[in-house]
Structures are given as C-alpha cells and as structure tokens.
Length: 218
Image 1 (tube, one colour):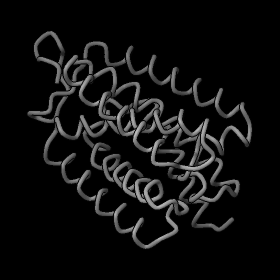
Image 2 (image 1 turned 120 degrees about the horizontal axis):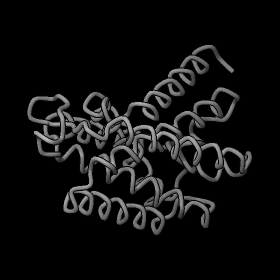
Image 3 (image 1 turned 90 degrees about the vertical axis):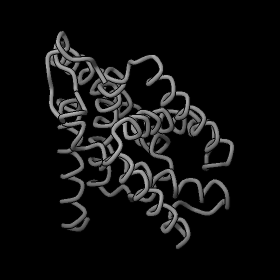
C-alpha cells in the first residue's frame, strides 16, 4: 500500500459519498467527469472483449479508452441532453456488465454487447419517458455506493486493474456483505435524494435549480 494509492482511494470514497447524498444537485458538475470515466472504461473494455486481452494490458486499450473518454467528456460538457443520455446509458451499461459478469469469468464480446444494448435502452427509454430526473438520482446513488466500496477495497490492496476488469465478481469473491452494503447505500441515497429534491428540478438552460411548479423538468 503506497501513500498515493491510499490518498486516491480516500478521494474516491469521499466523492462516492457526495454522490450518494447529493448527486442530483451536483449533477452538472460531475457530468463531464463521469462521462470521462465511463468513456475510458467502455473503450478499454471494448478492446478487452474484442481481442481477449487482459484489462488495460495493451497500449491500444489505453489509447482507445482515453479517446472515448475525451469524446464522452466533451459531449457531456457542451451538450446537456447528450450528456444525460451518456450518463444514464453508462449506468445501464454498468448494470448489464455487472449482471453478465456473474455468469462469465472474463469479459467476452457477448458480455460487452449485452451491456452496451442495455445502456442504449436505458438512455433512449429515460429520455423518451421523461424520467431522467429519477434515473439520475438512482444512478448517482448507486454509482456513489459502488465508488465507496471499490475505494475501500483498493485502499486495502485490491489492484485497480482487477476492480476495473470485473468489479462485481471481485466484490462477491471478497464478501457477499459488500453487495448488501452496496444495495443499502444505493437505496438509502435514492430515498434521501428523492425526498430532498421533490420540489427541485435541474434546469439546463441557466444551470440552476428551480421549483418544478414553475419550470419544466429537463
């Protein structure tokens, strides 16, 4: 355990806690950051699935990961609705990848395609049904919960590359109690954020929050 890794893990835990408790109100701030992170993960995991290499084991996976990360981050910063679609879609992708990871020891092309398809369904469905507010709340709560747990595991010596390759399997193999903690934190954050933001809606036009009786939800 190095001091740098410990500091990094602590930052991840604190950011995760902030997302669980207040992710919706900070959404515009974290949107390009999450876009960059998920873009990197999706790009790198795509290379792993296509070529069958270990996660981040090749220069190509790093390059593709960073390219996709930059594209996602830029789109999320300059185009709100595209950013929302990327964010919700990334949550669906992560969910599909986690579930498929329970049945596959390694990331395969099938796992990647199923996760990608679920991500597209989440992104399109969330926007068409106009339920993005609640999907954002759910996503920030559970992503924050996952960040807290992965930060703790990383602080206690779990290699980041292993966590990125198949985090759910790593967590399950470590202890099923982590899954219970993950679900508990995610549900708690969702309930707290819904109650706190019941009369508040994020409005992209002026990057502020207003009473939803006077302003349409976006």
